[in-house]
Image 1 (cartoon, helix red, strand yellow):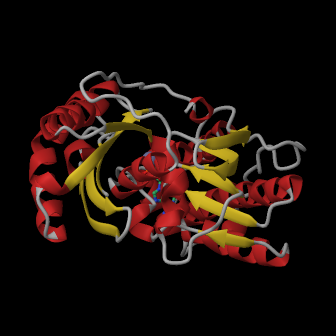
Image 2 (cartoon, protein in one colour):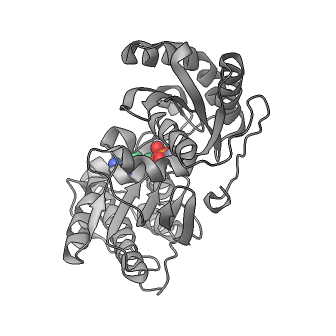
Length: 336
Ligand code: KG4
Ligand code: ZN
């Protein structure tokens, strides 16, 4: 069956066509980075307006790329939450209307479930059960994933998400928007040891995280004295080293605690090279394996939504009738 996936929870419009027999046929993403850049962050109203402009051209694009037509679509999956309410409503309204017109099921998908299952789209996918480290702009969680829809929260951040910490720290260092990837790029050329930032909750004995103090520690350093560009680069390196050390250490503790040997990393921060390097080394030493989604599927996209929707169809979860829907801007993954 051909499943159309629509993602519009934040500042990326993503559409994709996934076939349950043939795999991913096409996917296209429009990023709103340029639109929000001047404001230094996502402006929800502008995000919604832009999603509306992009969704039909992107649909045409994926249909052409896959060499198929609307009539071939068997189900439409869309991100129903969590995310920005207005942005979610664009995808949901469009998906539900199209599903009604085509007389096919509409599948509301949890955004994080999309991220969580995205490594299964790769050529060498993990098998259930596995531990998932979800690291995005809005979430930092460790989960035990036993199957589609079977998610047990092992630990999460008590305050800022890892991506949020990257973005906020980048902002206070005067880097552009979105800051995370830029900070990470600078960090690669810096020397971490020049500064000594804390490793929050590294030895807390549980699987909770806390990243807001790290951002404050950077702020304190920045306020102390005027910094040269070289010093800023070193501070970026130390900041990244601190986040990576905590994320990697807790992911390994989660593997040990669950006695599982597969770790799946998902969400935008999963694109971070230093994190990948630390997890590669750590899992190998622990006799475990780590799986990442394809780099282009790490950040928000329609492919992961189409795939999660297809899995839900395959595993027989209840499919509601098209036409009745609501979005859930706040929605815990364990509630799916
Ligand atoms: O999963 P995602 O695309 O959107 C959310 O659902 O939040 O993640 C976006 C987050 C942003 O905070 C961004 O700064 C961060 O992922 N990010 C990175 C990198 N690439 C994206 N953080 C660190 N290093 C990167 N290379
Ligand atoms: Zn995301």
